[in-house]
Length: 356
Image (cartoon, rainbow, N blue to C red):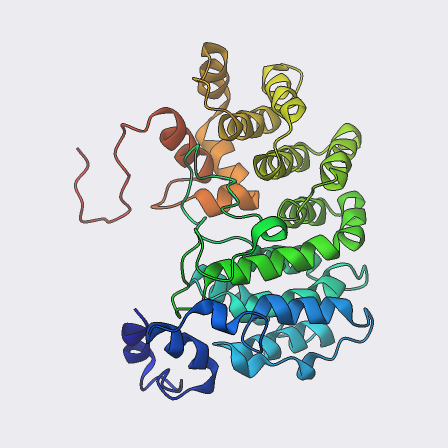
């Protein structure tokens, strides 16, 4: 896996992974080293993020972080710097951070989360919604294209309770780095800074409210503070797309921390004919992810009636649905197929493949 990555990069202006110091831990793991031997050290992004969080909250020293210990660390440092100074290249910087997560290389992006949160929570900053989405990226793994009942909204491990020093259900990143370590580090940062993120649920910009919910859904919410805030915002929210996002965020948190009243609440939402179609559809998806019960007839009717192609494409504005999308299939359509019609074949966006 790493060998092919090194060959692909060779000659493209990127140093060989076999000699690049940023891959030192990854090389050792490929050679059979125990990940636990690196736990708590300079290559453990969980320990480094914890150290940053325990320090002063103001004036975090970006250049003091050991970016060079992680693949693509220098690119991530530069991207965060551009976002901090509000450079015209900020959009490109976010593309760098988002691209690394999409390409399954999250360690350096996870180290960036404590530096990104102050940017996202500064009302004077542009692109706050995009920054919130980017900082949420390393807090999730193995979720792109996932739309099944047993996979969507799933947190494969709980970093607060059992952040393994070995490999866990997240496996490894494309670089060989333990993916669960990156996820745990990012979620720990979001959990620690949840008090700063929660007010964004009341931000004037709907896009910020949506991505704030998306970020907060990854927090360890053992005391139900985030879930309570999501419900309170839902009661006051009038924007249908934001209401849909709040339901999906509540469902994601409930999947990590079981809460039967939320399951019942979601069912009530998709059964409520006064709710906007987007809200009812989001509620069906959330409810299906939280129960193994067969989908009742009225849920099928709700989806058949409301899930038009136009709404399916519109709901891709929600980051959960956008991540679930694939092969030219909108996220909602993919969820419906995988959750309710799993016998249907995977669509292909290959123009050379003939339709059946």
